[in-house]
Amino acid sequence: MDKGKYLLFGILLLNQVQPCFGQVPTPSVPRVSWSASSMDSLVERCVADKTRISQLPVKALKFDEGKLLSKALRRGLPELAVRRALQFLQQNQDRIPNKEYLTIVDYAQSALDKRFHILRLRDGETWSFPVQHGRESDPDQDGFVNSLHHFGNEVGTHMSIVGFAVTGGSYYGHSGTGLIIHGMETAKNDQACRRSIVVKGGDKVGTVWRSRGSVVLDSRRAEKVIGQIKDGSVIYFYPGQ
Image 1 (cartoon, rainbow, N blue to C red):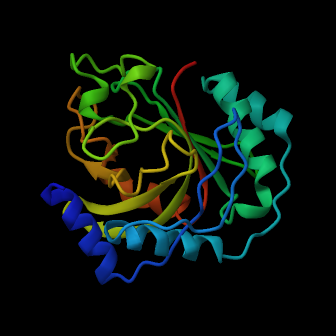
Image 2: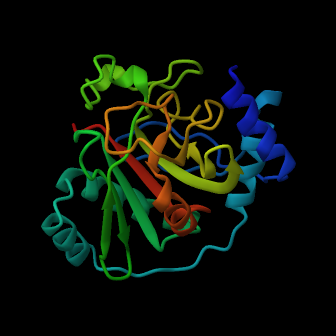
């Protein structure tokens, strides 16, 4: 494990971050399970954070799917991604603590495009920002994730993840405020926390610079964005298919 991964888990330990969702099967729109699975000592803090999220109060939130979809499409969001994400949220609404926001990362778009989309569910307001992806998901460094074969779930791949995830807690590291990500699909993205896949800030957004798998926002926006979507909101990493 490289220094960045040790740093992340050291931060989590110092902050006494608390635990997690269990893994789920991988249908097109999976059902969340909250039972914590056994993990090795390297990811005890991930389990702790998942458990903490699972114990947060879940508030009901009614929203008009038709209006949300209409507004999202007018803002240029991919229709299939929005439909899938709203379906996931509806199927798991009793297990999602933060239903104020829904995030879609559209990996069909370039790193130069505004492809990190945040939807406020109560009124359909949308904010979009460029973000960077994992270096091994873009080996030719042209700003695009090459194909479905360039998403990863194994430690050390330095690839971006794909599929449904739930946000964990925030932490403060060498890049400033960061956000833990818990992948919810078994064998697809369930190693995200163990891989130290996070949302964080950086100073090279808007270029084709690549991360080690994390989602990197402009550092000037990261803290505010993370504050909105942390603690149990849905984030969908859309592969474009």
